[in-house]
Image 1: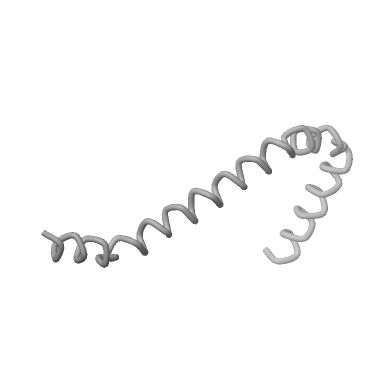
Image 2: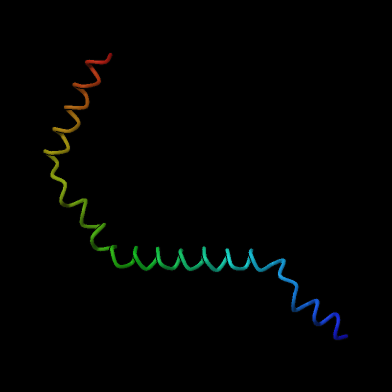
Length: 69
């Protein structure tokens, strides 16, 4: 009985997998917290882009593509 208990305690075949799952889970929690805090900042970015700036950018890309066509 003692031999099997000692073998069970010394068996670490699943330790690397468990540690990797804990590491990935911790990283996912950190990313989710960062997304939560930057949600207002990221949703406000769309309002800052002026439509005229976007039109100028589109026109310059079209002019550039015409030079390579």
